[in-house]
Length: 140
Image (cartoon, rainbow, N blue to C red; front, top):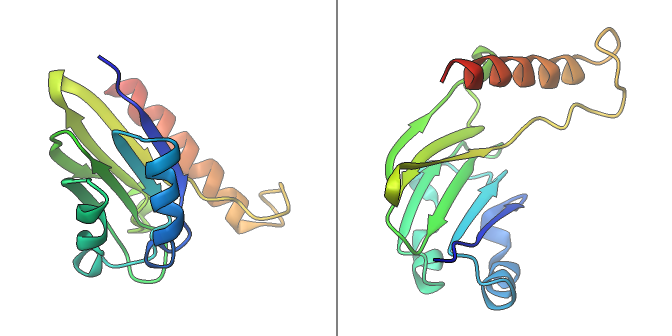
């Protein structure tokens, strides 16, 4: 069985319908993981993805910032979200595929332009999140 999973930083999902149609037509993913959807969960454009053939959708959204979504042609189960670094940012959605396969969709902070934790708090946040992720995955 072939299972094609595609990941894309959408940078505002509601503005990207034509690109999403191209991804569907040219890449034909069974599962599409989106990051930086920039929309609250309750305002996610489900109808757009239903029309694209993604009948199973899980969304961990946040107004104007961050947010992740998993869109699928196959059933998804058991959405779990994680709060990294205590910031309550919608950056991680975990679910299960048939056969018990875990899927994690993550939006990792870019960290800014200066790779120095003393000069750039965004870079510190990125490293802290990666450290927490590493430790969590080692335990789970």
